[in-house]
Length: 73
Figure: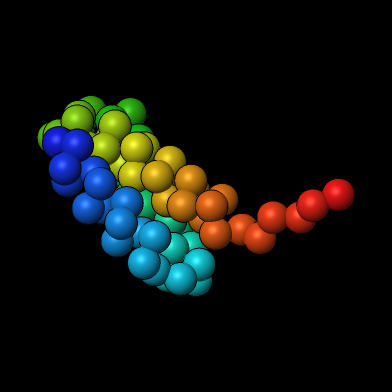
């Protein structure tokens, strides 16, 4: 994935609310589980997809962390 595409994707994530991001995260986690299962059984067609999904999960978690209210002590 090119940097330009990544920036567009992150901008889309930042435009979503926390609930929609949580739903997207759950769907990606499910896909990640299925990909790992396919890899373990030798049925995985696209090995690059495992890394792409892992990166998307990390991006969504980062955006969710940015949206979390900060508390000052």
